[in-house]
Length: 197
Image (cartoon, rainbow, N blue to C red; front, side, top):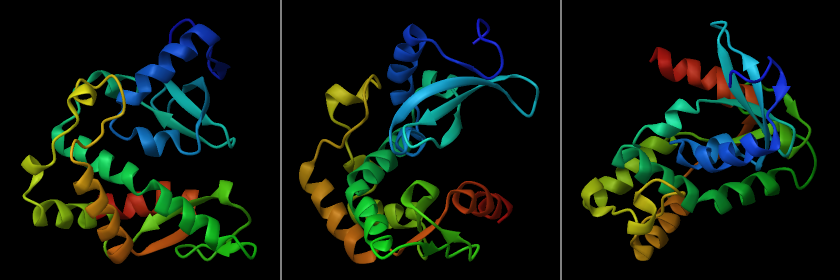
């Protein structure tokens, strides 16, 4: 980090290292989004060096490399596995929403011109509530084992029980309420609202 100036793109060797490192981030799927394009060193609001992940669709998001060095709690690994297991459902939802043109954000009322400006939000229940109800109905966290070759944290975690994954996908398909919203609404407005509750 200290070898780069602010707003400088991370070089090829360091980028390769960071691509491997961020797979350990507890929110890897959310951070990676459409795919990792590269990294830029930025000045944070606290006047420190920070890392910005630039996605292949041109959007960007801050990412803590320090978070990648911490052991991810089992509950967080399980939620990550569940989120990844329904990624195709989420992609299908947003693709269908834009089939006939722009979409109106369900939170702000703003027009969203294309999928690269949109996020999909779980609401009533939010994703965490939906996942928790499924986890509890299926024996609690202890019933959700991480595949042994993935548990060390050097690759994206996966659940060991494929039948459990299939059950979760069906449960999500039946109970999830999805809506298309702007990235700003998802990453700023709704998060501030959740933190204040």
